[in-house]
Image 1 (cartoon, rainbow, N blue to C red):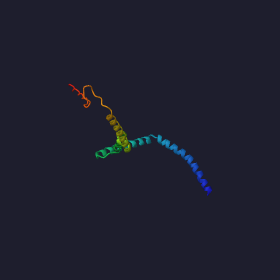
Image 2: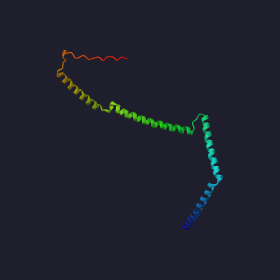
Image 3: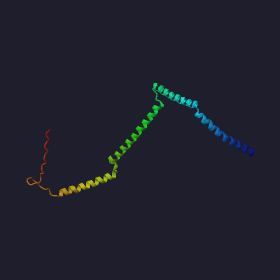
Image 4: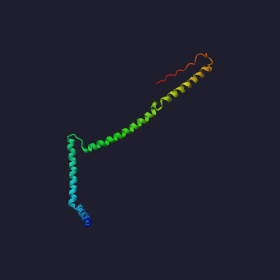
Amino acid sequence: MSDASNAAKNLRDRLSGGTEDRLGKALGELLESPFLTSAIGRAFDAREKAAQAQEVALGALNLPSAADIERLTRRLRSVSHRLEGIEDGVERLDRTMSPSAVEPSEIGERLAAIEAQLAKLTERLDQSPRPSAAGTPASKPPRARRAKPKKS
């Protein structure tokens, strides 16, 4: 059995070495052939004409072609990317402008601190003597001046 496998291996080695060279030469000559080159060119031209005819037929039936769908897909992706950018900007604005950026417990603490400061200020104002103008009684506050209207 080992003699049979050795013989098959030797035959395969001999055929593959020569076969690869012969196959390479044959393919090289085939690709250099003007007949094959022109046939491949005509096949590609026919394919292009068939694709154009298909697009015209689909347009006549008011159906989108593959090119139309590809263009629409690209535009949709572009709009999607722009919308994501707008959403990110709105989120950033919302975070900076939102009063909820401050926790409710912080709001209560801030309000309590403001109320305490207002109480201190009103206490000071109640205790301090009010200055009086020379000719006006102390009980009447000075009169505010009115702004003159501008002439057009």
